[in-house]
Image: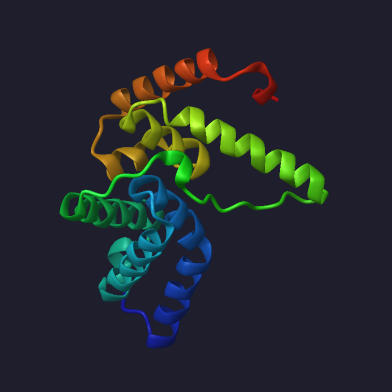
Length: 173
């Protein structure tokens, strides 16, 4: 079924509203550069505009993450950019009812946890972020990374086990 131009535009606008922030965060974990991540996400949405919406509608989120990941990895291969994970500027979203001082403590804890995430392997970090930060299923992670669901489960299990070993008690709350 072909969409009208207005319906197509509305679909794309909703996709941007729903997924832009999480795609930027995800691309930032790969590229270690927020500005470059924004460019990759913009390119991802340009590619969505060029797609037959009926072919991507059912699996839109995994399609967007796959395109975003592939574009980011292409740039890494091309530019061989490297930067420590803790240099990433994470998008902070205040929870409802958090006071500024509580938000500051929360942001500091998140930053410290991300420093510990840097001690994991690249694949462990990626699947943990996709699962817990982005809320994707194993099947969606499989579509994005090409890893088997068994391997994804193993990487998440071993990554979380490693984090439990290295993260101090004050960060576990």
